[in-house]
Image (tube, rainbow, N blue to C red; front, side, top):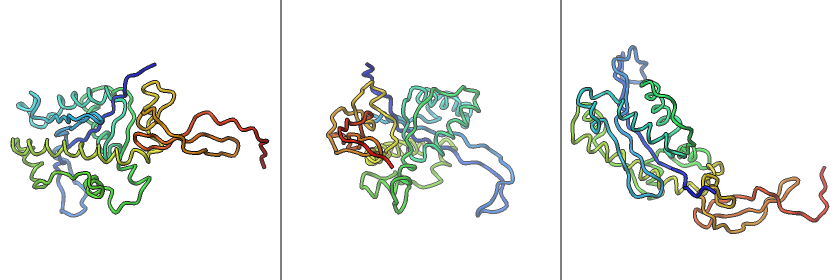
Length: 256
């Protein structure tokens, strides 16, 4: 039996903007791209562990030669996701992972090892109807934190111009996004019906699929047209699940 816990991480990236030519300011199509975007930083945290890490362009040697070259940062990101079993993030599937993959293939790297993703933005839209699904508004709604306030777009400009103070704020901003996203995920966890089965990663036959806890309480029966299944509620995260095998029924079964 594999007793090793799956490597579950929360991540968030910050990118530079495109530099393009436009005829105007409002809802314009770019005429031409002068400079492509690149990744500025990544913050990452192992689920339910205290330490949050942030890696940014100035942390690598290439930065002194070229402030826009994210090759070494991408290699670091590659190591992180290549070792991950499950990756959590807000708007993760549509933004972070696609942006990361775009830079991975640009730098000539092969795809990382397979992983599962949990996108808290998708969860918010699928199971609930909040006034706003932004990370900041959801976390403020639940009173579990909020994003770091900063001067706005000038922060990105400061980082792109090599300002040390801007980079310090950016890394803190990036870290806080990951910290509050973890709290939001833990809030949503019991409601996620298609959660990757954490118990299977640990080789447990009887465990909560959402968190891997083996302490479950019976929660009634679920009936299909032909079978009955025992329902369970996790004593740790509160998620509901059901037995894979059906219950034995002694009564005569009829069908239409």
